[in-house]
Image 1 (tube, rainbow, N blue to C red):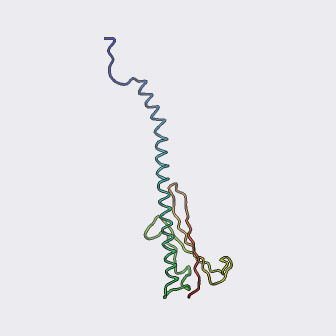
Image 2 (image 1 turned 90 degrees about the vertical axis):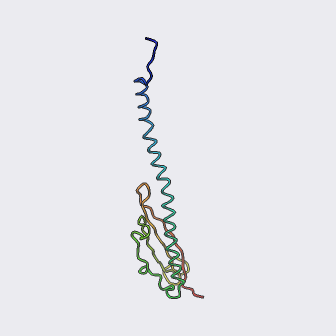
Image 3 (image 1 turned 30 degrees about the horizontal axis):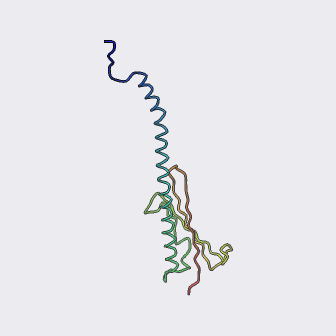
Length: 140
């Protein structure tokens, strides 16, 4: 009966497999977490860009509206949205700065409009995306 082996794993094989799994599983879980973050962050950035452009388009529409016009472009008419009603993961604010034609000297005739959208990324860090445009007081 000495030549017959019983099926199964030896103690050494079992210990070796546990050591290999113990070394391999944590890096695999870390890699899965990182891939998830890398997948989510571009989506959040894209949504933030869309939300900023949406507000810029609202401001441009108000500028060209026959009932609102250029004089309507003041911060009081565009309250900060914290959070945005349609997407509570984001905050949005609009700032207006009236300038001269050089776009840096305070004056009148040109309106710098900036929309800032902020959110928390997959790592828990605060992110902000800004989109800006310039509108004029000129009416043909």
